Image 1: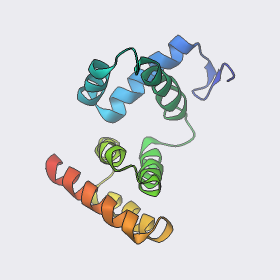
Image 2: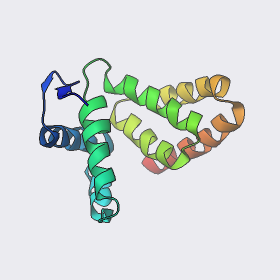
Image 3: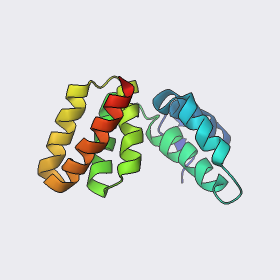
Image 4: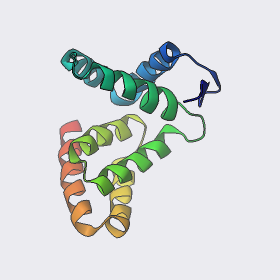
Length: 135
């Protein structure tokens, strides 16, 4: 991978990790990131480092889309892939990124057409649980 970063300049792996951790905490919240970091061990440490640098330090930190839009895309991807545990995490992130309950509902309605009604049905159940917990 090139040293060119989507954040607008040359970054080292350490710089990407630092930016990624900052973005990850802003999007997911300190409590979630602290739990993930506490569970990290010799088997999972490289994976955690990779997602921090690339998912959060590169992709989520790029200026081309705002975080609300990235949340909409990510919710759709989680539904399409059937990743319901990750969907719950990203519903919480979408709220942190400023999406309303109605906007999350609209994203999930959209997924019913493009990802399938059974996938959207499962997604609505997960989102409803998360939104109820957040109230």
